[in-house]
Length: 372
Image 1 (cartoon, rainbow, N blue to C red):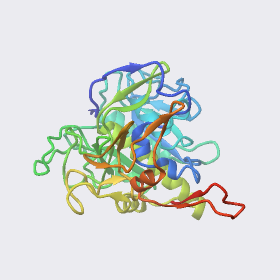
Image 2 (cartoon, rainbow, N blue to C red):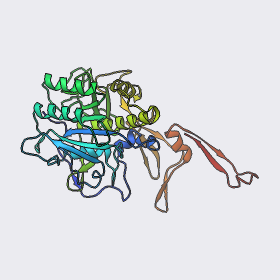
Image 3 (cartoon, rainbow, N blue to C red):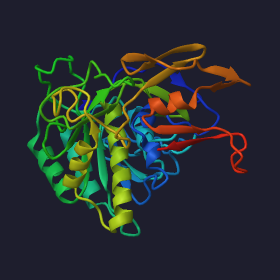
Image 4 (cartoon, rainbow, N blue to C red):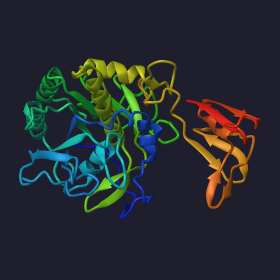
């Protein structure tokens, strides 16, 4: 059993902003749209991985415990970096923000410092997660497994079935052996087991990642190319892989469960979660299901999935893999970019109306009304 990621490109000692920063993948999935309702309160995600650097300031407040099942590594502290990166995508809450910044995390170390682990490690980790109970009766809601093997394992399959039957949604990285051809399937386990949510990877322009596995059990896709997240020793790193796509969905599931519990005072079933993810996905490939994108990009914005670039002094803009023209070129004023409200609303598919000045005391200078 091994990790599902690519080599490190660069490691950073700081983020791209002095304020809490939302990485592009989180924005592409429109997590901010649900944050006014919930940021993941009342949910727990178990990260089966290389452990988590629970000392990282962006994660320390959300890691509530864990356990190591790796011989020779008794602490669940991450000695590799992969699990810390995955955890940040789910629930970082500091200099960067994950999908669900207030969900809690359990670090379940099943892979060693070199990124390898046995099926026995993983099966023991799943059994522990299934039976874990917090001080106030809390139970695990979601499992993220950014790992895989080309070989099936019946014992692991049975542990996953038991976990799902206990009401826990299991989210898995689809695998990184893809070739971009929808007609040549690549299969990894546990993602190929029908009880799991299998997640493929796209880039920030919503194109399929050239490494993402394709097969008939891909459920949805999420950002997984040059994904910025936490790294051990208070650092940050960009990594690519379906390993990065899976925690985007695990965090989204935590948000869905949190909102559901607020409204109905109970947990949704894993079957409900699967249906919700598939129904709320934006179709990116062939119409309907396809083996590259599954049902598409899950997002909390049904008109989302847009990566837009505007250029100062230029009316041409880029959107995903296409381009268009603005009515007015953006410009800088006092160091801040300024663009036409009408243009921006058009790009976001929302309406706006300009009301000219009038004798109305509430409208002496004119106003803009926006509906969103």
